[in-house]
Image 1 (cartoon, rainbow, N blue to C red):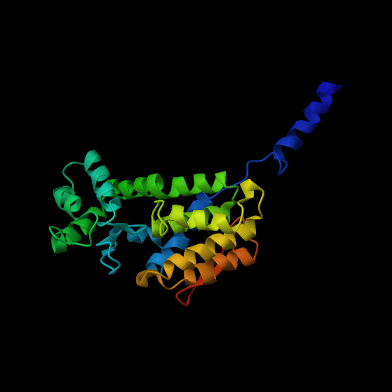
Image 2 (spheres, helix red, strand yellow):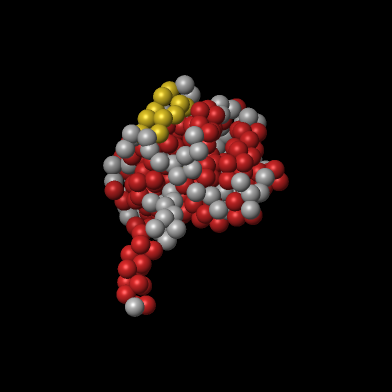
Length: 258
């Protein structure tokens, strides 16, 4: 009888919400949404895969900004992308710029780069190997650490995206203007869910802390990606980041219906 009852109950236990693993931002459909949300703010389009070829200097003191999440020549992550690409394909169009990328790291200089580098970046973007290098560095430095840290803090899918978007813009450092500093400021104002705090309250504290940092930098002073995107989803209590989603960034309307 005990075995019979267990056989009847087991399918129910396995399919119940409590037994099922909570979906997170690393689920493929949610990761796709995350990339589209970031692209709407970074590139004013949902078509994030078109951004592999993107490269320009936006005047934020970080040199060239390029690729799917804005790798920068002045912050080391663009150098890491080209290094990874070169390890797999040594004869690629960008390999010859590695010495220049090392020299300009930490500055906004274009020395040794310029138009030849821009042209080489555009050529490389048509190569699947270069696109894989961008994907891999995005995941290693930004996406995976953000999702892991958010999950440890007890945050659901929206909160994981809030962390990811912040780490993309501000970097994974610990100083006051980086992701680590923003998180520390938020934790001084509210407890994380893992600490027994309310998820919505903590996320509001995190967004408040991030807005203060953004307003200190002219290039990032428009906070609509928080005010009319992330905060909107939070007001709607869409903590699972479930579509349909409608939001505005810089006054432009976006919608994901699937």
